[in-house]
Amino acid sequence: MGLLLKIALITFILLFVIIKVGNFVFRTVFWMMGTESVRRQKQAQAAPRPRQKKGHIYVEPIPEKEARHRRSGFNGGEYVDYEEVK
Image (tube, helix red, strand yellow):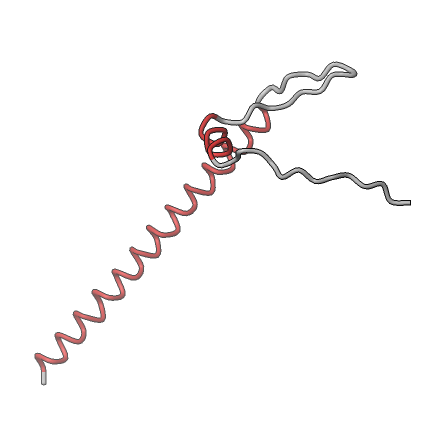
């Protein structure tokens, strides 16, 4: 019975240590991810944007990867005849 008690105690202690260490690592990793996300957001907000002149419109360019995706499947729209409703 003494051997079974030792094995159970060692198993319990190992599980306890693994859970505590895993919890610490999990929290640390997600804390670091959160601070990195906040840093990127602040950096994006602080980035200088081109000033708009009065009466001019500025359109931000589409990133190349997204632009290729949008162009690939579009061959034109369907013609819809216009009717005036009175």
